[in-house]
Image (cartoon, rainbow, N blue to C red; front, side):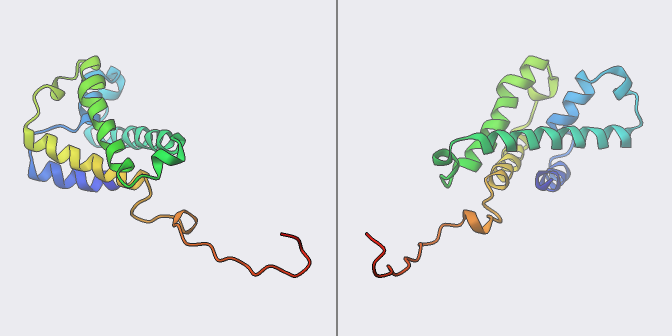
Length: 146
C-alpha cells in the first residue's frame, strides 16, 4: 500500500505510462474483467497488486534469517521483484507496455520497488523483538552450578 501512494505520485509526474498491474489487466485479463467500469477495474487491479505484494512479502519472510537480516536485503529483494516482472513476467505475458517504457518511468518504478523492499524487510518500523539489543546478564546465584 505504501507503493500505491508513491506510484500515484509517479503517475502524476510521468504521465501516459501504465503501471505493470494495470498493463497486465488491460492486456491479459478475462474479457469479463476488462468490460467492468473503469473505477471497478482499477480497484480490482489494485487488490490484485496488493495480493501479489503480500505474496512477495511472505516469500521474503521465508528467506533464511542470515539473508533477511542484511541491511540491503529488503531493497535488493524489491528490485529483484521488479526486474523479475521486467525481464520475465512482462515478456512472458506479452505485455506491450513493458517494452515501451521511458527511462524516467523505469527509474520511478524501481524507486517504488525499493520502498516495497524496505517495507517488507520491516526497516521502517521494526518490531521491538527484531531490534537487537545487548542482553543483560543476570548475576549467578550461589550454589547453582556453573
